[in-house]
Image (cartoon, rainbow, N blue to C red):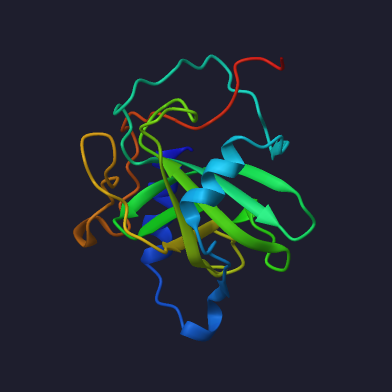
Length: 190
């Protein structure tokens, strides 16, 4: 999930004022019965694709250790399903990476949060109504996507938002600060 990288990119992207016409927006499909969809999805044999499914020198997280960590599942009209990571930035918004989405083919986005084990009964699922891509800044693509959720995340000890840089930290580089990279993945190929 590279949460600190997200924070740095978000800080850079938020430091620039955009015209609304510069920001790509797409409306998404939310299932009529989200709980039934999620239950069927958990029990399905869908093969999820990950851009890089291995984590080097990783370790398992404990429940509640990263309450802002989201497992993002992206559904394309081709039938492909991709898994990425993201972070909760407010009760109704999440931040993830742009390269997980196809602007034309992506039609549904599901966020799962609340437990380190994706099959846990403590898992909460939410669907995104729409997403936005951060526009290029002087030819540089910040690779950010923000998703608005159809329902708020129920904040508790296992679900909460990540701390974002404040306006007074705008332009601050955070050099020398320790980082911790988190995400969903496997330690091996089997």
